[in-house]
Amino acid sequence: MITGITGQDGCYLADRLIKHGYHVVGTTRKISSRRLTGLQQLGICDTVTLETASLDNVESIEKLIDDYHPEMIFHLSGQSSPRLSFDQPEETFESIAGSTQRLLQAMHRATLPSRLFVAGSCEMFGNSHQQPVTCESRCDPINPYAAAKESAFRSVRDYRERHGLFACTGILFNHESPLRPEHFVTQKIIAGACSISRGLQKDLHLGDLSSERDWGWAPEYVVAMEKMLSREQPEDFILATGKHTSLRVFVSKAFESVGLSWEDYVVHDKQFVRSHDSYHPHASVNETTDRLVWTATVQMPELVQRLIKARKKLDETNYSDS
Ligand code: NDP
Image 1 (tube, protein in one colour):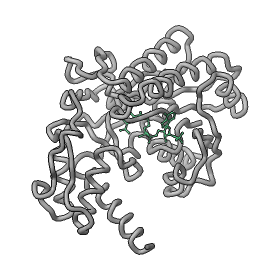
Image 2 (tube, helix red, strand yellow):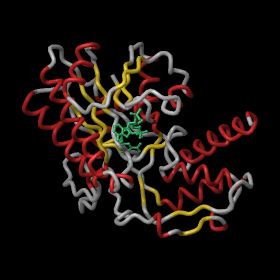
Image 3 (cartoon, helix red, strand yellow):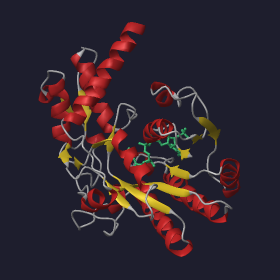
Image 4 (cartoon, protein in one colour):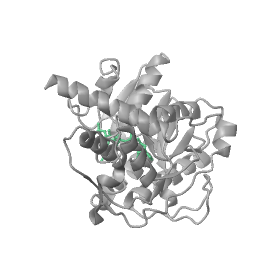
C-alpha cells in the first residue's frame, strides 16, 4: 500500500513493486485525470488499485488495512513543499504528522502485522550545527513542514521502541525526476531553460543561488525505500547522495545543456528568496552505504542532463500534438 501514490515517489515506487510482482494499492485524496498523469506516464494507471482516502481519521485507515492486509505500507502522502507550509501550517502538520500518528495507531491495533516506511525529510535538521548530519543529529526545524516531519519521525521511533512495530523513517534529501511538479525550483529551472532555448520565454526569475542542496535521482530512492522494509530489523536511514551542490551550479548546468549561458537570462528576484535557505544540512551516508547497502549513483551533472532530456522530449510531444 502506498499513500500518496500519485506523487513523484509514489509513481516510481508503484512501478517498481509491480515489476516485483506485488499487488499495489494506492491512496489519493481524489481521483482526477490531473493527478493520474505520473501513473499514466509510467503506464501503470490501470495496474494499481486506487483508493480515495485522506487519512484524516483512524477508522478509515483501519478499514483500508482490514480490507487489504498490506504486507508493506509506504507513507509518502502529505503537503510536501516547505515553502507552501508557511501558508498552510495546519494542513501541513495534519497531513504529515497527524496522518503518521494515525497510521501507527491503526497498525498497532491491526490483527495482522504490516511493515511501515515513512517519508521523512532532511528539512527537520534545519540549522543543525552538526555537519554532516546522521539519524541521531539534533533537529532544529525552521518551517512548519520541517516541524511536522520531525514530529512524524519521533512518533515512528516511539511506536517502534514501545510497541515493537516494524516502522522506520527514510530521511530523504532532495531527489528529482521528470515527475516533479513545476512549483519546485529544480523543475522551474529545467522548464525555464528549455523554454528560453526555444524562444518561448525571455528570462528566469530566481532567488538565492548560493543555497546548496544534495540532489539525487528519484527512481533510485524508491529502491532504498523497498530495501528498508525488506530488512530483518526496522531502522531509520539517511537517503542522500552525500554530495551537495549550489543552485548556481544546477542553473549553469541546465543552461549549458541547452547551449546557453545562464548569466544572460537569470534575474535575481527577492520574492523567491527563502530565509535560512543556504543552511542546508550535509548528509553522512556511511551508515546507509554500509548497512542498507544502497548508494545513490546518479549525481550532478548527470541528474540535470537527464531532466533536460526528459523535458525536451515532453516539449517536442506537446509541440507535435498542438
Ligand atoms: P509529491 O508532492 O509529489 O506527492 C505527495 C502526494 O501527497 C501528492 O501526490 C498528493 O496526492 C498527496 N498530498 C499532497 N498534499 C497533501 C495534503 N495537503 N494532504 C494530504 N495529501 C497530500 O511528493 P514526493 O513524491 O516528491 O515525495 C514523497 C514524500 O517524500 C513526501 O512525504 C515528501 O514530503 C517527502 N520528501 C520528498 C523529497 C523530494 O525531494 N521529493 C525530499 C524530502 C522529503 P493526492 O493529491 O493524490 O492526494
